Image 1: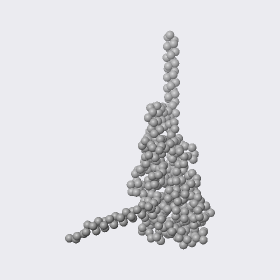
Image 2: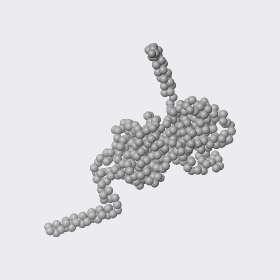
Image 3: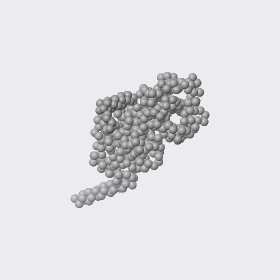
Image 4: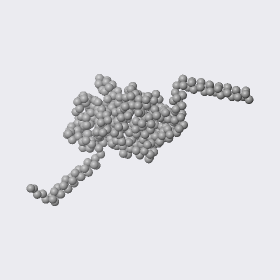
Length: 429
């Protein structure tokens, strides 16, 4: 039997715990900005978070279907060195190398399998590819002849999508450091302008508001930039309250129509999130539904699920609102007929299924729900009997020209009958 001194055992335990607490304290000081999507959210639709053509950062490296783009990264890096001969490979590596430790800490799932050399190489190639792509996209004269990225429309479409994915990111300060080396130092507003132009067509609704007034060091990564650039500037989001009453549900479009609510498209340039309800009319901006729409919305929602503590989670709130409006293809048909849903998928049932799953495993932060007052006003409208009666009248008697004609004929006949009856009474008198 082995005897162990209780005091030494306790001391060893304390030393072990203190070491873990010290390590935990050091890790807590570093702010992670790039995560993997957690299992519950990912499982709803894993493909929405997976890159199609390019891996940026460490999380999707070495996947077979993404290896083709590694040659394009090298080719773009070579063109950059030729275009800027004052900057050689050593200067790019040195530029990024001094930030290697800080960049590693940005990844919640720290890429320990990558050596410092491999990690710096990844940052240089990925960062330079993004910056070269931005420049070539905006300035056609900078494109190389026969560049397949610009010759094949599907590739550019996929790149727009892949570069905004939640897991497919580089720390934004790395892009700024490389941009300082490629362009003049401190010209970050130029970088923000290039990004705004590049991602403008990605939004499924109006959102680009011009130059974003934000310090580059306050931007976490490209997805954060996209989120900030789509942020509603006005107060047209239904009159947000500081404290709402916990009402996060309204009826579907078909049910609201039965309660005498009409849908109307908003004025041009109105932001997607600026939904208004006034005098029984719900005014909404168009939502374009195409192949990439679900992925764009899901990744923006994923960002809000991780970083939404100190902001209005307007994308999460919007999909919650949309999930209420759309229960079936009938609701999609109503919204499409009024110009609110631009259905590029062609299948109303497919749109309904997509919308119904957008809010699955998503947490809504109740006290800052931006549509709280609008939801409350809709509920008040629906509770009024006269609105239900008016809707019933429209549905049963005013829904088609033949029903309106029959109602008019019936009213005329009734009026003639009453007139004849009155005349007969007067004759008898």
